[in-house]
Image (cartoon, rainbow, N blue to C red; front, side):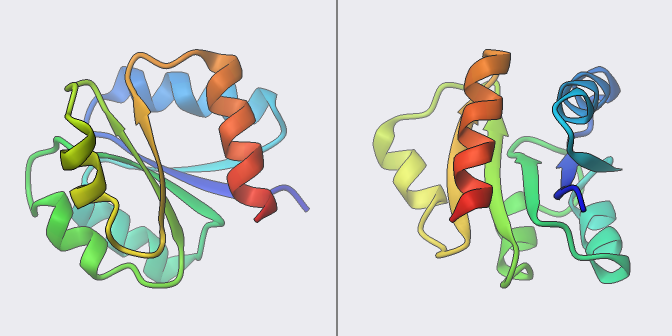
Amino acid sequence: MPKTILVVDDEEDIRESVKMILEVNGYRVIEAVDGDDCLRKIREEKPDLILLDIMMPGTPVSEVVKQIKDIKIAFMSVVRISDARKKGLCAQDNIVDFFQKPFSVSDLIERIELILRE
């Protein structure tokens, strides 16, 4: 049974690109357009990992992650943030990684494989 990854990003081209990369590498992908959509989707089905964009309209991501307790989350962001800011964002136990956009396909897949093995 393939692992399921929920890709949450308000930019359709990024969601579609990440979805294609993940599916080619054997993952099942669900998509959400923002944090509120993400919360709706995880009520329907629990993914193994959520790839969550930090900068989206709607409910702030910091509020969204507080409602997700038992699913691993990896942030994705185009903005460069300091290590201190990263640590602040990654304080919750289920936040397991941070991907800087644009990311290399091989790095994305390698790190996701590591996350899902743990």
